[in-house]
Picture 1 (cartoon, rainbow, N blue to C red):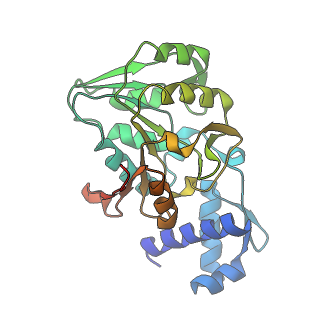
Picture 2: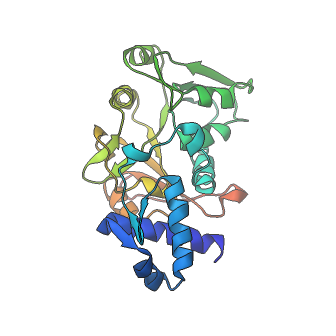
Picture 3: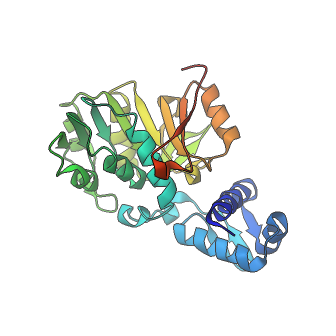
Length: 273
């Protein structure tokens, strides 16, 4: 199977898990018309990414908070789609903008694609984001203080929230571990949620970057309703029916194309934006 078919299988396996909570290699083999050896290889790859937990004969769902590895490790997970999301999101940042970029693996790819833009200011609470931009003389980098969350290389807490009062922002770009239509945006780390809530009140232009694995999931700490987002940037493997429901809420959706290696993206317009 080529890479495209493998990625589509992975996406459908995760959808089956979301619907049923458990899958078997035998059932998936029949559903996709491939060998059980191929399915077991798919399950191994998805388990390595932290998207599921393998059991004898198949796999079960896992809670995001149980599996979230450090950001330096997650950067290599779903790398191609994160690269495409990063390029598409960076196109929404214009010369002269002041933009906050939050911590995370997908936001790292956004930062990499800002290099070369002129006279922009990037405010961040993530050390790795700051390092991505440190050598570009056209970009002013502001790092807010706070308590460092080591796994994310990010600053959170009361000091971080106070620091944010000293800056003005045109746009905010955030990642999130879990997105659910009814239960909203959720995270697994309450101090980070509190810092992100402060951010959401600073501008009416909130850009959320999330790959297809983040949808229809719920973590333990509530951040905000999904309508707190003005623009969602995701990849082409995200369920289109789910995206249609998001657009019905008045949220603009940008889908990074699978041919994003050529630095192109396609936009799904919202009639309400």
